[in-house]
Amino acid sequence: MMSMLRIDYPFHGAVLNHRHGAQTDAGLTITVNGQAPSHGKVGSHRLVADEGTFQQEQGEPMDAFSQISVNGQPTAVVNGRFSTEVTLTEHEQDITAAYDGIHGRQEHSVRVVWDRHSKPRYRFSIDDNSFWLRDVTQQDYASLYDCFYLAILRDLNQKYGAKFTLNIYYETDDGFQIKDFPEKYRGEFEEAADWLVLAFHAYANEPDRPYQYATAEKLAADMDLVESEIVRFAGEATLAPPTVIHWGMVLPTVLPMLYDRGVRALSGFGHPSSYGYDVNYWLDHERAEYLAYHDALKDFSNGIVFSKVDIVCNNTPVEQIEPTLQAVFDDDDQAEIMDLFTHEQYFWPFWQRYIPDHGDRLDAAIRFVTERGYEPVFLHEGFLGGPA
Image 1 (tube, helix red, strand yellow):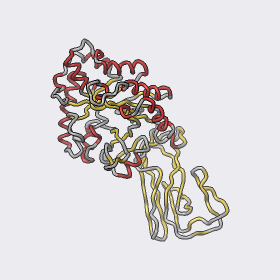
Image 2 (cartoon, rainbow, N blue to C red):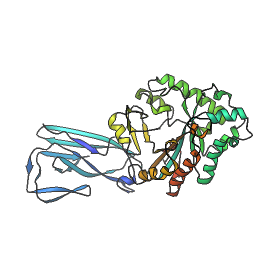
Image 3 (cartoon, rainbow, N blue to C red):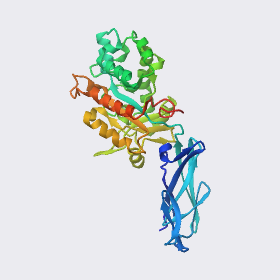
Image 4 (tube, helix red, strand yellow):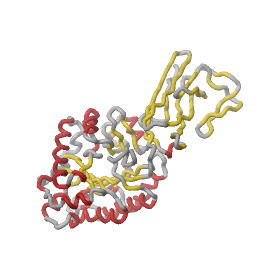
């Protein structure tokens, strides 16, 4: 049976930067490779792979009847494989391999994103925020930072320049609703908007996966409810589009609605669990597997870029923070954007899974990226926190 033409690298939707090739003012030159139909051998020379390109030398003959071109440039085929260099010059660019042979013509195209102005950067997102909203309301503090949780975040900002996106609920388990949060702190929110923003997460903590099968209308209604309250008590400057929907599961048919509301990036995971993939926005197996080992992946059908969370601090003991992030730092496919993450409830002593050193875990993670030159960003700004 004749093999099919296929580009194996880069992956369709890949977000590429200076770590993935040779970048100059003219563009980013990458190596494109894949598999090609192979029908017999010809000649007395062969081409061998050498640092991503093919070099001719004496030995096995190269494939006959496999006329391959990549973006119009003829490309050699060796043992059913092709490899050639392509220079990306656009933010989004198609790469097309074409075959003309005894079985007719085949084409395979992928589209990739060139993050031309990419720089090492990190974002810190905190899910499930509700307890501090209730605490501030009930205690009627003179300042937001009289709440110990917000004081921890302010101290990390002052120490490292860290920025935080707090993903919030409308309601807590005991019935507190953010419609009762006072407006007296609006000035403090607005003063902090360059490092502290609030975003919709869900209506409430329960049930789990509340939007896994929800309609766009249901999700939009809950977003409207939360976002209108954020604007009321914290101001427009503090409102950010969501980058994490509770449990990271929404139907693909809902994503265009999120895009229309300003969502450009969504964070989640790609690793499978014992019961299948989860917290991956219903990405199929192949794309979820890819995202598990790469910074980001774009879905061109809806314009959303999926970002891989690199660490969940509430699941990672202090002594494991550095080794966990070091493994990411050492991998060029994951190192450019550090997506740091945790959950609010583990800060609170009344929570059944309270973590006394939770703040220390955040400090360790932020210290790691800061010492290695990463810049704090908001993922919703520009392109994944970098220049557009």
